[in-house]
Amino acid sequence: MITFAPMEYASKFVQQAVEEIAHLPGIGRRTAMRLVLHLLRQPESVSLDLSEAIRLLRTEIQYCQSCYNVSDQPTCSICTNPKRDRQLVCVVEDVRDVIAIESTAQFTGLYHVLGGKISPLDGIGPQELQIGSLVEKVKSGAIKEVILALSTTVEGDTTNYFIYKQLSAYDVQMSVLARGVSVGDELEYTDEISLGRSIVKRIPFDGTI
Image (cartoon, rainbow, N blue to C red; front, side, top):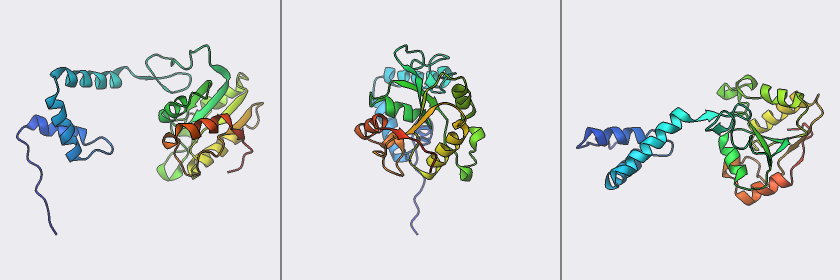
């Protein structure tokens, strides 16, 4: 079996930068090295701007107190937009799904970000998600329709069904994305046209998985 010696660095600062960047998903040490060398070739201001953007990302970002999307303020710009239909709420797993749906320009309501989906194997139950706050919104009577826009996976369908059971006692219409989104697909990887059509052509949710 052939083994390779660890990569040696002439600078401990380069090594530290490579090791930190290599922690990012989908980036190995070689790719991290290319990125570090690229930054070294750029004006110093480029690296400083990048480090400041990352610092602000960690210190200033909040989660919207209404929909749990990322925000610069206590309430996000989507929730405060007066042109949004406040009687229509789209339930998604995480922030990436909000970005994906917004890119279609087909949805004019509000969002509710669960923070994941029910997955017992991963130790994620309903109590770890923002399901209780969704029930409270519906209970207030201000919401007329809830769109369940979760991934078409076993976990996504299980979460759909659980939410349906929690909301079935209230006077609210429930719908799911039309199956222009293929079964087993993650929402964030669905093309904009298919996702947009799925929003527009949504169908009533009948409580089946």
